View 1 (cartoon, rainbow, N blue to C red):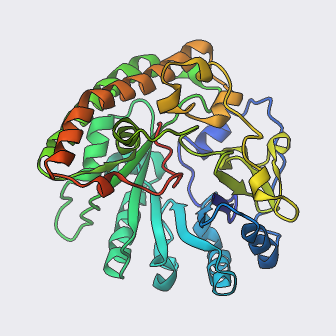
View 2 (tube, helix red, strand yellow):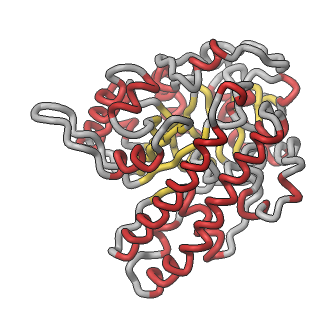
Length: 381
């Protein structure tokens, strides 16, 4: 099992597609309850719950808000494992602003660090605030020189009018920024997520037109990816490697992110939800760490139609549990999102013979395509 551990619902940024939209798009028929600013449960209560998990090894993803706003809690949880020894893998999803504040002896314990960044300097600072790109890339270079050897995943949020191909190439091959200026950070692992069907904003957007360009960029990126593979360089683009794994090695998934299956969220009040997006929605709570049995949590919330009748359901898995059970876009918009996923899958089917040949020829190794399942890179954008 993997558990998102929300250290605080607070954040130190106000990104356009997150906090910004929360102010701009307040209409909702969902009733949320507020959750505490910091966890109210004890380490004994948390670790007793984790110890009851029969599906070991257990992994923890520190999450927020911005998880590093509560560094002391992170340290406390990690330190507690010297006694309990139930957690094998530590992960964190962070905006990266405070990475330099967490002591390196904790940073270097992480299996994976997922960092929110949307491309190069211009797009990242536009979406997240002036100076964000400079601070984040500086912190990433710092932790690498301080001994971090785990995986760093760039986690992009994309929507129109973003130039997806150009933005992702800025992460793969960052531009020089001048003398005595930050030089960016070269990412070998990237996941991107479409900001689609999450807000009541479809009529205010131009997703229809932009998604056509996005699909063309996916094809362009697929061609670049296999070109690099032929050179023996496999970039860990998670939407690509996840689907290629299934196509080549017949690995099937039910809901790629694992929400409500093998991936759950522990809220600051000790309540358990299927995913972080459902924080505060009482009707979707699955239990409480004080009494819940982990093995009884799965499949209390299920993907519904139109996903389960789709011809690509086995490869897609339903995309997003939250947007499936609570769609906020009209049917036309939902279909457009699904068409983008189907296009991605078609492109992976197109290039899979090239990847298979590269594996047989020894250009790349099978283990380069492997990853920690449900590691917060949801595979289907």
